[in-house]
Image (tube, rainbow, N blue to C red; front, side):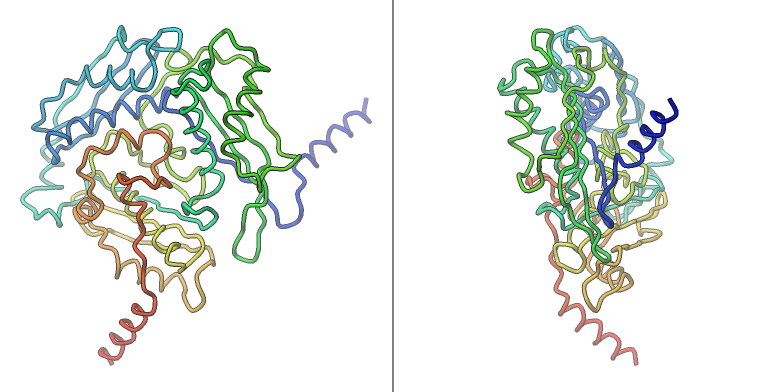
Length: 419
């Protein structure tokens, strides 16, 4: 008995034995039909409906769902005439919940609307009679941006693959490549990385987990076969897959009960899914349902824009940007740049901080203007991630290429003038 216990302990100790300098990192993503993501989509659909008629709408819309009950609540000040209940039902329908057997039916869901106007005190502090460029932040808080050169999209590979798998699952369901699929799904990808001085790079995919909601007619072995054929082989890069790559496909065996019947949903509960899959950090603020005067959203987009611009300009290989704000104050209270020691030769993080401040105006009003954030573009962001998507609506994904030679010359000229 003692010998068996010792063997079990030895197995546990070596389960994740890796070559020296290697480590594992895992990210996850969830589908548009996950209850939390359904709520994000509802909230962003309400936001878009307001912005479509009134680009200056002030929106802080939360959603919650359980079983056949869906509630939207929060603060909205707008000149738009919005049929809120219709917007909610249409959002539920778009996600794919058209039958109670799937977890919700948009036709007979009970919709509760509880919306007030934004506090006049907040409105006065943020907007008042200020010029658009000088409008203040809608709240205090810190926002994080991150970029890494390990993928062409300058996203961490773990999270990039998670988002691509989720997109493929949705494509297979909507196009009926896999008609047995239902809207709810979750994925998880673990990648083995190798450290090399201050940098690291992906070596191989260690394991992939997919939990896909399904109808009652398909068997578990059929699900595994179809996920391999139609999803994994279509998305996973061959260079990162080997014979040791592990697959955990619907490990619970049965996943027919999903959506709001399987779990309650709430806006803003998947903030790591929305961002970088655990890399780089997070300021804590959610995105969905918030108009761009809320720096939780707009400044997080701007921070990603800054981070991606630094990496795309080859000033560093990996970087995290932190920006902090105070309610009613337009200028950031702090800016922090951390390139994890991957900065280009001749540069340090102090230089990168100067470059950021010289090339980017991070006042909320200027961010809104430069990134064109008053458009009704937000429902599209509610699933599949807010970053790493090369689509025209995602203006924060279009990097500003920084001319380092010109910046150094300008800096030298300024030093000479000050002497």
